[in-house]
Image 1 (cartoon, rainbow, N blue to C red):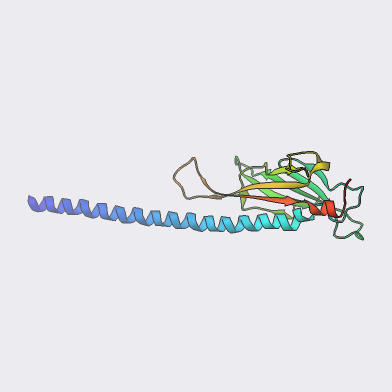
Image 2 (image 1 turned 90 degrees about the vertical axis):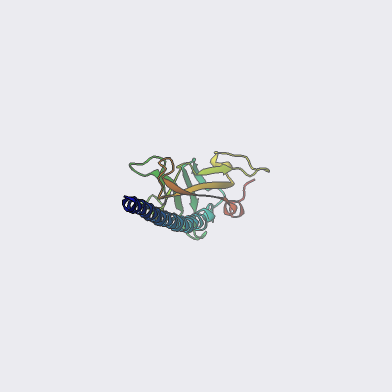
Length: 196
């Protein structure tokens, strides 16, 4: 009888050890997946933000004439501005930076850029952002004051929270998040096109 109890005890102990090993392997895999995903999210978010800043926002108002307005539309989810490659270039570029909701989701948006009304030349997919309202505009006063009047805008604050799916059992937090905020001062609009 004692040998049967010993066998049952050994079976229970070995089952507990095997379950512990399996759960440890699963947890290590979950941590590895979330860490790699977060690193990829950091790299992708930084590339998207620097591309948006250096390829588009840096050019706001570049090479415009005195009677041309740099910013033509400024809302929380859309920013439209004018720019030229050089003053000899007769063709002005109208750049539109905007967010669109991802179909079938809530609080998931893609960041897009189109030039001269053409289909988007930049789309942040498959990296998405949490909010469609990413732009906050400021005037040229000291200290800067929030404004939405296109003629008064001297700078923009861009608030991006990048998302990636997490391996997570908590349904209230299905995504990993990487918040990133940067500012861009529109110096070209005021160096090339001074205002009184």
